Length: 168
Image (cartoon, rainbow, N blue to C red; front, side, top):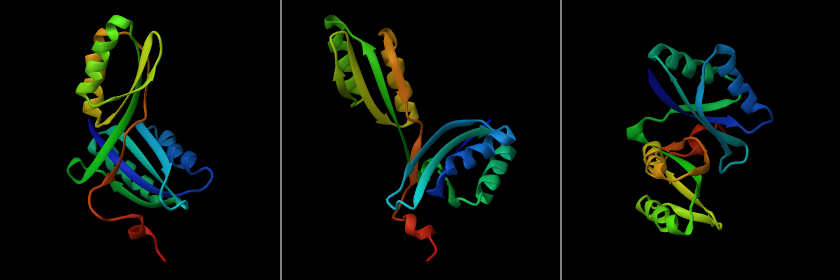
């Protein structure tokens, strides 16, 4: 089973997320990760969608998304031609004795301590999925109280920008 990361430039209109995600649910395709945000041009939003399936299913997904009225441009983010990142916040139980050990793990990954409480630390880390997974695995000896991941987001490498896709 393969994985495909799609960067989808869409019109920034009400209901666009519902229409795009509805295509997946109507056809029984599962979205592994979905992030959406307004671009530098407020008329457009960029969706990063991660899906899994065999080659035929992935090809079908690409073609179906491309046909949607709200879609301005769709690009597959290939590992060698793009930069993809994810953000994770992890709240770890840390007594006074454990605190330095947790901070040491965070330092190895260049993570930031963003909140300190009497019995816990909250850590922020940005990186590729493998880095995030490795970080969480190293925290295995500590009690993770809460965790949240943003999902993957990314852009193609190079100097192209949103203006390349917009017709005058």
